[in-house]
Amino acid sequence: MLKIPDHQVAGHEAGLGNLGPLIDDSGRFYKPLQSDNRGSDEVTFYESLSTNTDIPEHIRKFFPIYYGTKIMKASTGWDHPHIVLQDLTAASLKPSVMDIKVGSRTWAPEASEAYIAKCLKKDRETTTTSLGFRLSGLKVYIGDDLGFYKPDRDYIRKTGPDDVRLLLRKFISSNPSSETETGQSPDCSSASSVYGGPNGILAQLLELKTWFEHQTIYHFFACSLLFMYDNGLALKGAGSNAEVKLIDFAHVTEGNGVIDHNFLGGLCSLIKFISDILAETNDYTGTNGQVDL
Amino acid sequence: MLKIPDHQVAGHEAGLGNLGPLIDDSGRFYKPLQSDNRGSDEVTFYESLSTNTDIPEHIRKFFPIYYGTKIMKASTGWDHPHIVLQDLTAASLKPSVMDIKVGSRTWAPEASEAYIAKCLKKDRETTTTSLGFRLSGLKVYIGDDLGFYKPDRDYIRKTGPDDVRLLLRKFISSNPSSETETGQSPDCSSASSVYGGPNGILAQLLELKTWFEHQTIYHFFACSLLFMYDNGLALKGAGSNAEVKLIDFAHVTEGNGVIDHNFLGGLCSLIKFISDILAETNDYTGTNGQVDL
Image (cartoon, rainbow over all chains, first blue to last red; front, side, top):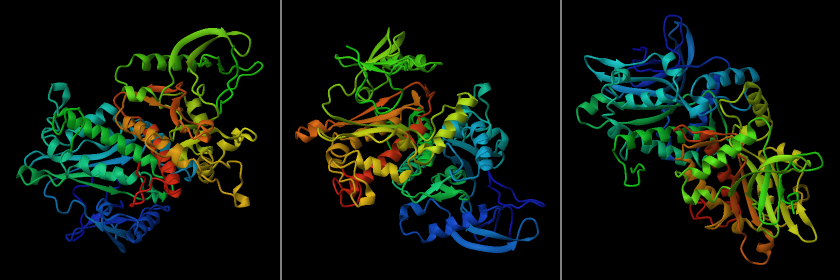
């Protein structure tokens, strides 16, 4: 019943001899515990999140449901401990998915010198330092005949600010494969239904932002925001089901009374990119030029 | 008529053989152009700010007035070019002043490797990385007999998060010199008149925050927020004249369509510290425990 997820856009992929996540038919996602302390640290985070009564209910929806851990046959064929989570794309017919690693720094101050040096190098090579976030992966459903637009991961990670802006536009376009060189810009046809509106991605990001302005429980280093919507539903006129989720908690530290200014800064930068796209597409734009939800 | 400023709390100090700022009786502050490109870069910034029509009027008040540059006899005795600015403390009888360098990173991505390494080391040794800001200096007026509380700069820079919280409380206390070891906590007697209220420091920081959520003109690296209030006036019951100013623009870069997520994140962290102090002193606290201006 276990299989390799269809809609993974970033992270380790399961394969012959490779540890990677698996899913089952019941909507569960099995993530192998990572080596070093990363796997156990991520379990510690999920256990803490489950029992912490200071997390508001409206914020819990941004995290995958946690079902505990399980030792099971991994993608390598060997027994391995897994974190059992909600399969976030289980309910979608044709999910378009984007993985965005948030923060202008992916390392915690208490990390080892070697780890910091490695992260800092990657943060500076990608847009993490300059934009406060980097794209880690994306796929956009185009149609049953055309399948998905899924640019190469290495290409995505090496993009500059202008490419990031373009990919954020392609994510909600019906022609994401079109090349700007040929004069065909992404049409941003789903901007208002996916990014805009009272339940859209921008509204959800603003809800998260409000929490991050106050919460001092956790600092989320190297954590990702997942943007998802269902193009299958959208094409049927049944809404886009746009969702924002937080994933990857192997480097979460305690906040100790200080807000997560690193995540919050990156989140605000991303919010500006999304607001700009909505303003440019002339949807939800008030008379003062600011985005009006 | 030129003299060394009384109320400088950070930066280079003028002295025999040392270049440092000077003030005159007309309320002008003369800052010697720094070496390398820092001085000319700061002039470029002030010229740009003066002519940029995209800076809202209510934001201009956060910057010192700029009067151009002037070659004049410096504190070293030699002719040297100076930036001529408003002397921010000229109108105050007994100014209490705090200098806070904002951002979890003091280096621009395009800086040299040597400069980045130097800044990164200092950012990690201070609270810049962990809190998103560091205290660079402070002085608190106590009374005509007792003078000012002015802790050593090296002590201030080496503080941890708890010391920062304490110094932010001392800044608005009538007993800043008291030691917590003796059970004498800072009384936070001026919290509501300086940090709180519709014209207080928190309100001004929130005004700046709103601008930083949208502005993509400048990225302010290694820039400071100056908190000032007049204890002389406060003791006369004539208000505190609390003011927030932005200073030190030798490392400002162009925003190129991206918000200054580095400054904004640090600013939000500082806002949380100030809000917490107001909430703890039970002033301006609404029923939901959040600060109500």
